Length: 184
Image (cartoon, rainbow, N blue to C red):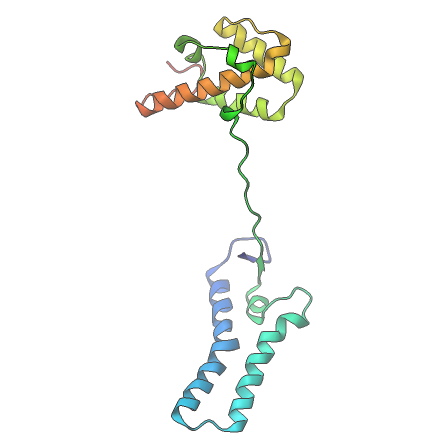
């Protein structure tokens, strides 16, 4: 759950203060007055009924408006929304393709590309377009000197992606970052 501005912009300090002050007035003020008067022994029937009606009226207010907003939300121009849960996508380097096990790459072949190309390769693999996979596999195969059959394009790219990612991560541990294929 998140509080958002109804205008779509970020929350302003005024909105946060108005919303939280109204919560004090809606519920905590009448209940604290009732508690204080009750502990002092001066609580009369009229003030008790007034305090309970006050708290009940503000508590039930969301039931009587179309957007189910508290008075604090109405005055502040905010509403409470449910933030969607973010789901992580599948880790492509964990894909187990039996054909991909056939492909082994040397350090020189893995050094041909950098982080930028790894990201582009991930985009191509996630899109899973046969013609794009075939074209990229042919291009990478030509660059690193590997022969790739069109039927093996996806397996080849999956294997290359997994090994390139591991290779770049190992190099990163040593402080050697290669941004793209043009970096030396």
